[in-house]
Image (cartoon, rainbow, N blue to C red; front, top):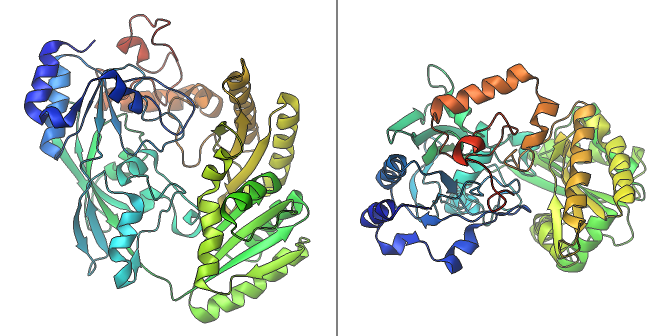
Length: 476
């Protein structure tokens, strides 16, 4: 319960327009793109860094838990307020503060939508490289929190490779800056430490990012297969030929049929799998690589190799990929998206294992993933209205992630650990590594007020401090 005095102080600072506390409003903030829920007791909308600092101080005086939120598109429960308390939404801190094309930089508030960065500079032939599938909705603050990736991370890297500086509000209300427009700031890489910390150590209020020049030539390819195993083998074959595409995306037969029915992007309805491959660079280089990729695909039994003939055809193919999750919603009322990583050479056996999980649990599982870097996104279809179905979906997801660990992979490539995968952290890391992570959390958030109940497994996190004791009403 938020004390009346705390509510009064927050209202006095922000005004009624920037505070929500009615149940019908709060229900919109109890979930993200995952499957778990918990409702905040209040949502506040800061307009500037100074507002965030005051929110931290006010909630600190009343020992309230606080959780940050971007657009709510996350898929691991990172923005869910497990301990209730105050949710800080950055939706209204959404200004592009500076575009510096001469130095290839932009300075942004955390609520800026990812795609809007590119739209603001594409007329000058620049773009912002990290492109999560949710880029039309997700915000840069959430991308920084989760170290978001996207289809083109194979060549460009993930968010941390493009974030050069941060402004942050610490848990004592102080405002600090790390990095900046310079390429390599001296001292410890604090910008890198906070990028990907999942909103558990500080509130990010300003981000300096790298802009990139558009490539001279782009070719988009669709390789079609009668066998998912052959499709998976092709990724390693392309790499063996010393080619690094800008993107290599794989969709299995279940997924591509759902996508084609929804978007009519030109995917074959009778295939078992497809690869969506993009090459970028100088015109002559790209033309040569197209032929090398053609040879690689055909050597792995691709039944067809298509090169998009126009920008419109290219955009349509990517529309199918970027709208895949929406296409699943037309088929199943609920779905659970996983985010495991395996070495490229283990893609084919991992697909076989996922097929076995699907059969054992009696759940349909479709696959769409960033095949170039082995970042899989098995999508488990279930019906939460059926007793036990949600639990089955979660158990199936855990089996898949444990298999990823067993073949030298990880439990997340870009969605984060959040609350969804926190209990698997001790399957991936030894106790000493978890102690180090816990040490950082305790250093920056000693009272365990900021986004409690995330990342660290039960017993190592701070939910026990925030909730004394856990009750049926607040346990997820």
